[in-house]
Image 1 (tube, rainbow, N blue to C red):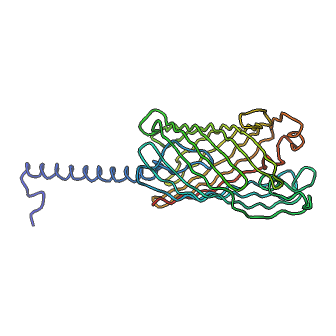
Image 2 (tube, helix red, strand yellow):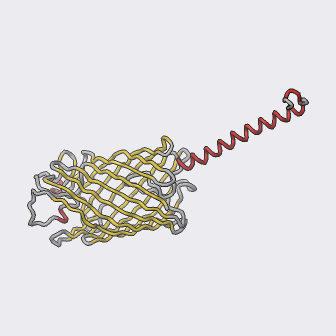
Image 3 (cartoon, rainbow, N blue to C red):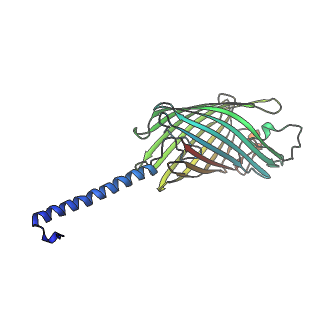
Amino acid sequence: MIGQSNLPRRKRSTLARNQCMSRKMSRLLVFVLALVGLCNVTCASAGESLFGWLYMAEIHPPGTAEYEHKSFLQQSQSRGHYSFLKNQEEIEYGVTDRLQLAGYLNWTYANAARNGIDGTTGGPGVSQFRDSSADPFGRYSRARFDTVAAEFIYQVLNPITDPIGLALYAEPEIGPAEFDLEWKLILQKNLFDDRLILAANVFGTIERETTKEGEIEKASPLDVSVGASYHFVDNWFAGFEARIHNEFSGYAFNSAEHSAFFVGPVLHYATKDFWVTAAWRHQLPMVATYNEDQRAVSVGGRIYGDEHARDEIMFRVGVPF
């Protein structure tokens, strides 16, 4: 075996250069592989939801689909016990580079007892379906099918390739006791090589609900929500969401009723096979009420009654296929 010291100087120099080049190529290969792996982790895939309630301007690529489950819990009012759980089973599908469609089924479960300011039982998901002949102080517990809905998202600007992301959203929703038509303006800004995601939604709804007694209630809430999510370690994002909810009676913002404010943290985990998001929003003690009916169900700076709970919790899981 010939040692390197026995080789001519020129050959030793050539061998050294080759070894140096080999080490550089190895380092470059490791860097590229690490970069690819990092991108798979840090770059939120299209359709993946970093937030609990906020929508992002990214959509699924054409021909790809995802199953998503959502559980939205409204918990606690001024007293007694109150829990209202909204569940959603959804299939999303990328139609074109710009258009995403989805269809979903909603079902709910409510459990409440003496949670009203006056000690009666009520709240969102309870009062609308409670028989007027029932004991007003008795417990209400029921699961029910709620609605079916279709979702249309059209991406105007891509947050990856354009300076800012912009998407338009429309959702008709219908069920035995309600009809809603919701619209959203979705904004998204990616910063620091997509490590920090900023999002904002402006959205309104035309709501028509029928009570157990056949009375029709009309409303047109208008919300503004903002949030930020930061990639702080592999697979994980963390951030916050804030919501300003403005309630109006009628179909066209006829009369202002109240403005409520919520804020809280959000945590997101993702792999290539699934993702999970958990979020919590707390109603801040700074409600603004605009009539006597709304003031009657407000206490401690928060509004309850048939409007809101003290806390809102969201759990989401998505599986692409």
